[in-house]
Length: 172
Ligand code: IMP
Ligand code: MG
Image (cartoon, rainbow, N blue to C red):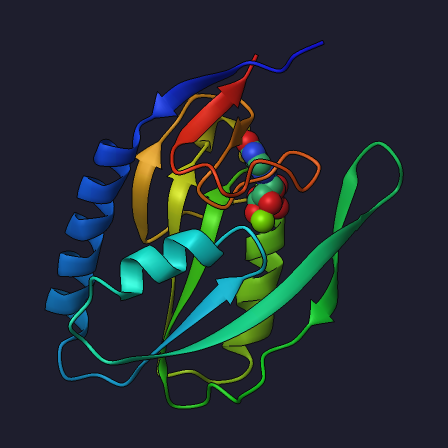
C-alpha cells in the first residue's frame, strides 16, 4: 500500500516561524554565552535552521536518550545513549526538541541537566502536542502547537523514515 503524506505545515510557514524564533532568541540572549543542546536525532534539522538564522554566537552539544517501557507504557526511566560532550556549569543552556508529546523524556532530562548547575536552562520545541501531556512540563518557546496527530518531516521520523522532508506532514 502506498503511503500518502498530507502537508500539515508547509515549508514557507516553517521557515517564517523559525526566523521569528531566531530573532526572539537573539533579543533575549544578547551578550550571553549560549549553549544549545540538540536531542538526537529529531531536533537536528530544527537546530540547524534556527541557529544559522541567529546572530548570537552559540556553541552546540548533543544528547541522545531513550525511555524504557514495560511493554505497553513508558516508565519514564531514561537511558543515555549519548551524554553531552561538555559540562554545562555556569552556561545559559537551551535544550532543543523536535516535538513535545507526553513530556516524560524532557521532564527527566531537565532534572538531570539542572543538577549540572547551568546558569539558566530552558526548553524550546518546534512542535507541541499539549493534549498528550502526562507530566507537568511546558516548553519555554514553541514553534507550532499541533493536534494529536502523528507527524513526520523536518527531522521527525516514522520508523527512521521521512526525516528529510522539508515540511511537516501527517501519514494517512
Ligand atoms: P515524550 O514527550 O517523552 O512522549 O516523547 C517525545 C518524543 O517522541 C519526541 O522527541 C519524538 O521523538 C517522539 N514523537 C512524539 N510524537 C511524535 C510524532 O508525531 N512524530 C514523530 N515522533 C514523535
Ligand atoms: Mg525525539
